[in-house]
Amino acid sequence: MKVFNTYTRRKEEFIPVAPGCVRMYNCGPTVYNYATIGNFRAYVFADVLRRTLEYFGYAVTQVVNITDVGHMTSDADEGEDKMAKAAREQKKDPWQVAAFYTEAFFRDIAALNIRPAQEYPRATAHVPEMIAIIERLIAQGHAYVVNGNVYYDVSTFPGYGALSGNTLDQLNAGARIEINPEKRHPQDFALWKQDARHVMQWDSPWGRGFPGWHIECSAMSVKYLGEQFDIHTGGEDNIFPHHECEIAQTEGATGKRPWVKYWMHTRFLLVNGQKMSKSLGNFFTLRDLTEKGLDPMAIRYVLMSTHYRQPLNFTLESVEAGREAIRRLKDFRTRLGEASAAQDNPALEEALEAGRRGFEAGLSDDLNTSAALAALYDMVREVNKLTLSRADAQRALALLERFDSVMGVLSGSEESLDAEIERLIQERLDARKRRDFKTSDRIRDDLKARGILLEDSAGGTRWKRA
Ligand SMILES: [Zn+2]
Image (cartoon, rainbow, N blue to C red; front, side, top):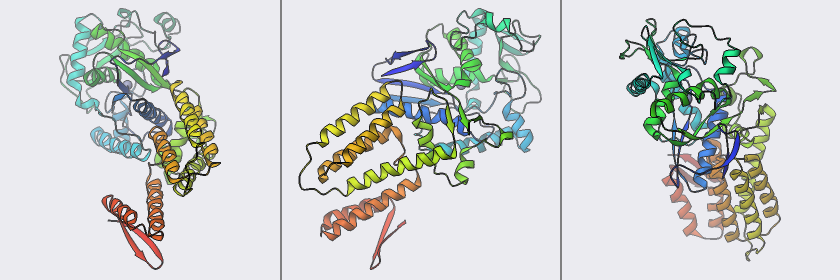
């Protein structure tokens, strides 16, 4: 498998630090508001990446942070904490705001059929780890204390700028950052801040205060994934300053390089051809879209079907096309369920094999999901031409299910779950018609085990959740 590494700016063979295992960190939400459809592009990408690695047999450990303190309104460390600002505007305290939107985030990712990560560390629960890493940075001369604030001295880290291309020379030449008189260099960034007005405060060796956003990801990724791991992802807007600062902090503290072997970033998302903004009326959270009646699986399809390094233009038409694509795949599945030829078809093997090769070739080429999907649709077209036995159909269904372990669009939502139940009920009716009561009973029992009760009557079979 090849992946494009933002750090080296080229496609590289993916070789994990430890054979067979992948440790991956995804920059997660700042829980001051609902995540937007642009944010979900990055989370769906991370999910598809994880599913692809699992498809290829890796054991993946995935960590997604929850930022609930310290992310300032400017991505540099100026302005107000986004949590504090939201709390002020909503007349709540920041802890309530964080709890509310963290919960909303988990509901949204479940709706998008994003598999749960192994860990979702919250920044506010890891302040001691952040203090420990800041102390290491001070001890090694990478950080300094002024009036209870701690800053990272970027001039002490020669690699600063390697990820983003924003070297200190370039940044200083175009310096438009307001000079904070406490900083030795305009590009220095805060590791620890004091602000008596902030509700979220912790004791530290430098007085009461709160951590900077960048140090959170260094501290939490190292805690759960170790001082060197495989993949770190985020949106392209995270490259600078966030990820550049994370590298300076972590490698500065541990002295181990590289901290992260592969950096992967999703490109931006436009809505109706324009950057999302509240004033243009094209600013969408997931619930804005589901309230319009859009199926979260169709939205997932749109987010995952464009290659992650291409800009994505999200439109209502694209969601409609996504819904149509899923329907075609479900129709294919239904037709396979009806296959009943007496003879196996020798042409099936080649059709499935070509599909599998194309699907895997697409994914192995830097997660080229659009190429993988094209191979899947070619396969569907070829298989549809064939007359199949039940055994043939089972093989095709098994492969489709395997592909869906990556796509995650056929078995995700409530709607698709319902369709699956309908399919099984039909299968049971067919079994009864041919007096195959063993199969019919097995399907009824399987559904019962999933909490689905069947009621047979003269008019047909109805179902309800127990
Ligand atoms: Zn981060």
